[in-house]
Image (cartoon, rainbow, N blue to C red; front, side, top):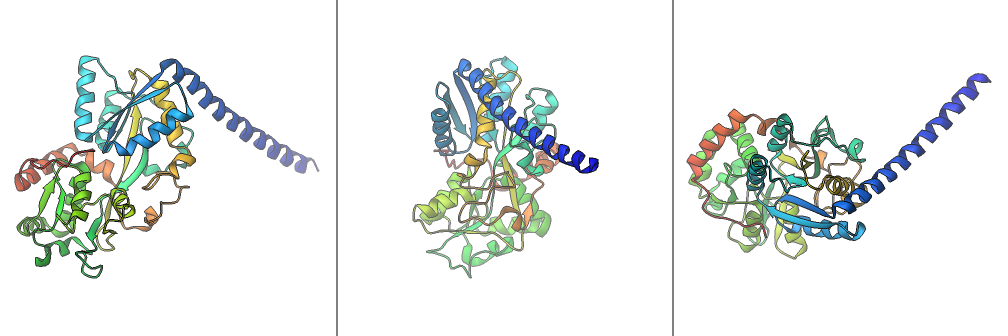
Length: 351
């Protein structure tokens, strides 16, 4: 009988502990908001188009009145340079950086400039999309995949592997970001040449490959017919094109691994409005916000949006952080790919 009472007590105490933990989380958000209201502002440096951040920023301002959100959207590999320069001049105005260039976070962690913070959703986030010590975390997950213009290419004829991009019927009809300029495209091209050899790249170029800066440019070239079979289409951009009634189809290869990465967020030790940054990060990673994404969530308990398969049902190349943190390899690859494609000439824009 005592043993049963002891077990009952453990259950009751466990339930009480959970209740206290839930209350602590609610108080934490309330406390963050009270502190953030005193800061009044939040400055986000976001990699990618402005449209990625406008809707959540407005929703955040409505949820937490009194905090004005300023968004600086643009290419991640330009934002990081601005932030690095701000470190040098001690003029940091970035509260929260949400960038594709996860290598920056790995380096910033080593340099000791990041603030350690684990939002309430931490345990729900897949371990491959967060820093084990809590210095940075993925806020949404996306990939680069094959795609095609269904008015110009049938599903049967669409590329199923990287080798299909070498077919004569696709000559001059392919597009990608400059691999030396875009980190995730660099990862794609690296995994491709690792699989098929550098001779593949020679043949890909000979087949009339086009290049543009930024995945927004890639996604716009597809429905316009400028390029009908991009090799590094961003699926969430493609979903937007589909929903606008454009002839875009996403194609995940069953032969080649699909590179994925988490758009990664962190705040800094010297951020002017650190509580506003933590409040936004905690809020954005809540299940309510994550279910509204038009791409995959880093949370294991959030289903993909309509039009995308479950992330881990795909054949993935999911070692992007380790790849991009290999500085010697990445530097050599950038140099080699730029020699092949030439420097950035065609800019795709971020709006």
